[in-house]
Amino acid sequence: ELKKMHQVAQKAIADPREVALMVTGASLEAVAEQDLRGALLEVTTLCKVVIACRVSPLQKAWMVKLVRTGIAPQPVTLSIGDGANDVPMIQEAQVGVGISGREGRQAVNAADFAIAQFRYLQRLLLIHGRLDYRRMCKFILYSFWKNAVLTLLLFYYTFISGFSGTSMFDGYVWTSFNVILFAPIIATGVFDRDVSDVHALSYPNLYESGRLGLDLNFVRMTEMLASSLVHSLIIFVVMWYAFDSVDTMHANDYYGFGTSVFTWLICAMNYRIVFITTTINWVFIGAVLFSFATFAMFLGIYCRWEWLSPFMYNVDIHMVQDPLFWIGLLAVPSLAIMVDIFKAWLILEFLPDRRGLVLER
Image 1 (cartoon, rainbow, N blue to C red):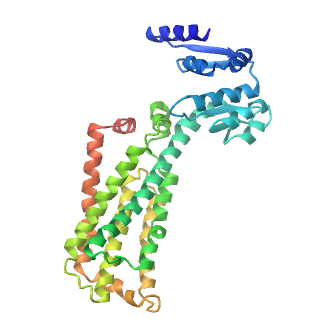
Image 2 (image 1 turned 135 degrees about the vertical axis):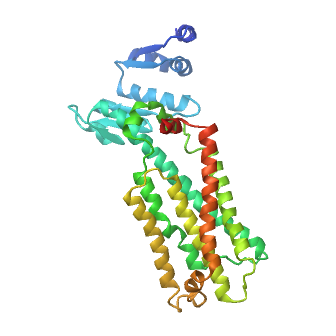
């Protein structure tokens, strides 16, 4: 019977027509007993919708598990229910949604998300689910990107320091990197919104970015590493030409050189988060200003107390008195802007995604 159904479904799709399948609990029991899971899965994957009627709670969970383990690559499954008989199915899926209603709160208690009515599932997926996925991917990629830029800078420096193992930055300055830069990306991860709710509901195909994993995959990670390579080279080249005659025999010059480059790095990191953020609100602006203020406060305290680090004493004053510092502070973001805008233009012009097309409209 399943082979005959498979042939009928293939013939209907070739016409083309949409195919639906209805199965009963007794049919699923027979499939499980005769080990026809593969044949059932072949038929169901050809169908637009599969309706299961009069099935037990364990059979509902069995069908979810069949999809999770039988399809490659493994899909993300979602189960939604409103009663105690839906709990096994909800727990089996990667994402469980419970509806609070007349049948109690058992489904809600077992679910990852709770909604009051079934129609709210559309907003949960197309708006909140998509936004959370994009924000999370942006947060992850930026976090890896900024640390890759820092690591690559230190790697380049080994070649001009004679492989001596000397660090370009003071130890305390180096370890402040992630503390200084945490606020802007947190604001982006909470408030960033690339399209409005109306557009997200009007163009449901935008949801495919999360379903297909388009925002966080091998290609995106490779692109992130390539971008970190370019941005670290920009900072290194500016550093090379600005401080080609630095006198490293004097502590003030050496530590002033390292602190100047670190300041350029902080400026480049904050520029980058502004560039990749779509929603620029007062919270995000405050977070960026807080990042700069935290760095300025840190240097102001760390370079004032000689007992903290004698070599860093008054380094910030000597740094801001050097014209090369201000030239680099303008050159690094300017070159980064040119590179990022050119790359964004190429992608939007020749490889636009659905989001880019919607934003153009």
